[in-house]
Image 1 (cartoon, rainbow, N blue to C red):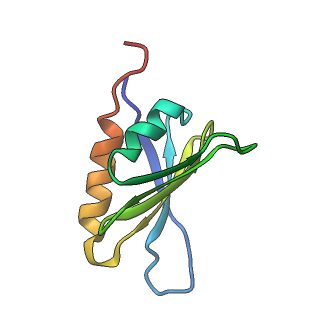
Image 2: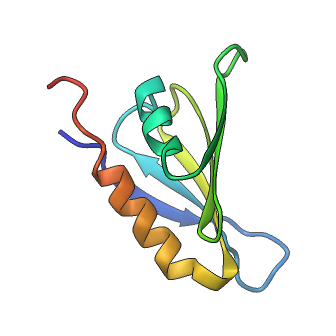
Image 3: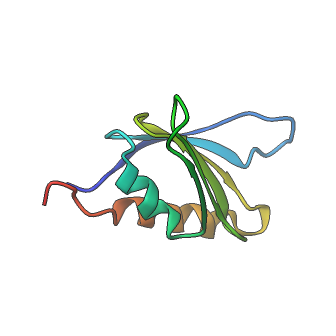
Length: 101
């Protein structure tokens, strides 16, 4: 079974149109999922942190952050490519291969 996005919640900020959303996943974020997401851009991963944090910068599309073991991702979309960025991220998440297979 691939990872699925269960819901998207737009997070409020000080701008009229928020570019940041939280994505609720159907499973926990694993190290292999983090590295898979990192192929889309520049990955910064800190597995030694008490709560292992990661960030993926996909230039011109989005910045993605999360914590290993959680079930949520935070994405900030590039203003000029909002639709392309979220569609590409959704396809990327859905394309993650089943770790059990």
